[in-house]
Image 1 (cartoon, rainbow, N blue to C red):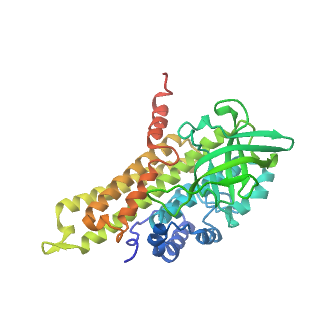
Image 2 (image 1 turned 60 degrees about the horizontal axis):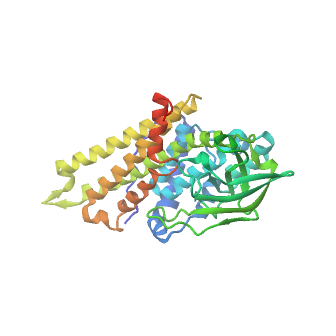
Image 3 (image 1 turned 90 degrees about the vertical axis):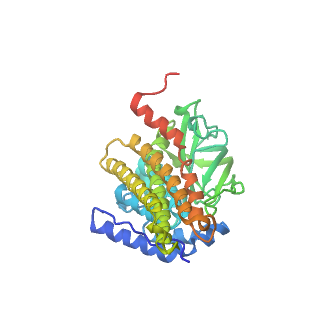
Length: 390
């Protein structure tokens, strides 16, 4: 049986170019991604050759400038591409989102010389990136990170451990946040570290309940030497760079959540119209029809919230609050919709013969990554009533 039902979304896209882009992405998902998704996820296989295909197709640098190998696409379009990819396989959609996040610091804060030297290969040269902010004792409280970079002549020497790194151990480059000054947010600086740097080692990948094909691992920096020419931005500017990246990255997570939820709805609708009980399709029963209607409505609401935030970003307007709202709502929505999809399929939904159980396991991580949903609520509340006074 196919891994998922056909995509049903009718998209409103701003240009003919963007419509052609979505058509290209759907072709790639149907030919290259969806057919092997269930088998490869179960085997824990990361599809590295596929990311080379995506890079060659221009899909790893969509929101960045074409002058450096990007696609010149607005976030409104890029996020809909992510949704399509995640609907076919979350490992791929989230992988593209993480790669885009890893490129953000250099694209937004690097010097012209750095951008000219590094960005073309990062955006369209087949390289794969990762983003290193979290640590074993520094997750939600990211400003307390302890990995340290010490100046040594024209180099920096980085020592410490990063945790929960998507693509950890397989990435070609890492955007690394390390402490170069005192405690707190102002003592953090960003660096671009090559994946083959001496002294950089990855632990065994974490054993996760979902997204088994996407490696998540700790990274150990044992005196990793990085030239000052790979420092991104000014000393002490790293935390501001990180927060800027996370605002955009949260939109990527929201798009992935919408994609997973849409895949689950498509599967549930296909099953409900084909499965017969009491002499008629189960889709005829009002209780199930209402459940499907609620699932579809939640997805549309999430997509609208996501694209509204994206349009603010594209217009150069503040969007941090809306990005947190989109990440919060869409990932909670995906958890609800995928759980309901399992219920629609009944006992079959609880088996690996159908993909909805995998969608449910995958949806859970989207409530956690790039700021837990509790952190998103804190971000939203700060915009509404200011910082905590306690």
